[in-house]
Image (cartoon, rainbow, N blue to C red):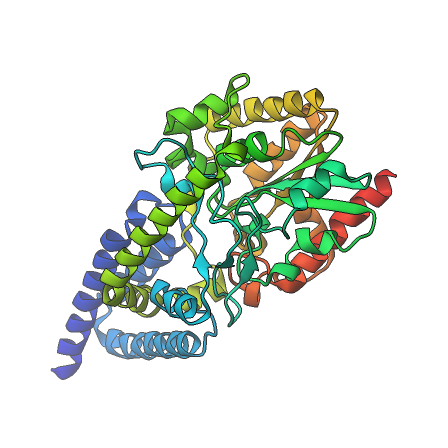
Length: 424
């Protein structure tokens, strides 16, 4: 009797939990995602077994032990994880050490403000994220980017090889110290002067805007667009292409003149910092509960290790329409660099998922490489270079996080240096 009751309860509870998870995480929108497929297969097995009355108790007991083991393993991985994504913990670090947070330009797009800042607060100690067991930090330059002071002036006047980098948080150097990111490492080369115009959250248009505002006036340079396949198209889809001001950067001669509006930009960034801090303090407990729910109940920590992540929403942004816009964007870069005797180079940065079994990036990767070849655009294929090492996940923080660790940045700088050495 108790075996029959257990079987019925197990069946009802597991199916109910699965339905709740599917609705709560909205993975029903992405029916080809690995988590959705996994849940459907498990539920089908449990439903089929339910009709084998003689064996279902034993099978369900074994499944229960299996699920409990998974839960315990995930719990162990979570509590031994040295990273810390909580904004409240970052606030503690900032208050204790007199640091300031990064303020991604993309967070300003919904605000009613005179100008859209494309960098953080100027001349301050800045903290990024904690993916390696320590908070990534840097001292921002006079315009709010991750460079040493006066790097803008230096690259204007140098006779060295000039490299200007645009991109998102990977380019910025999130989760590592200032001297560990690949742009800083390149600056240690006596024949190179590099300028970092990357910032977290930048997609296709924000990266372009950063170059127009802060790099277009620099002649005889190599502009390197650090394209991150994980979400650059997605950020363009959900935020950037809907913003009327950002669209203007695709036209001729548009600029916000941010080089001469730095004080106004810093004022807007400070106000955003205050609002973000108040919001983080207000939602301190909610943030913790959301983290525990995601990492523990959704078994997210273990899923990261196994590559069972839902990135289908990012993949939907690789639409035909956005690929057409992408090609126009590349043409815009070619036009801009021609005006100032510069050179455009595309740096393809893969996401960690690209090295997992069953990843979804093959088609988009092949299409982008094909477009670059058809347009005769120089590119550095970091995906292929990372594969050659035999241990590509060693580039990422703890092999599972989104950003590169110090070793990944060091290897990236080596690959870029080798590329220019071969060109010469």
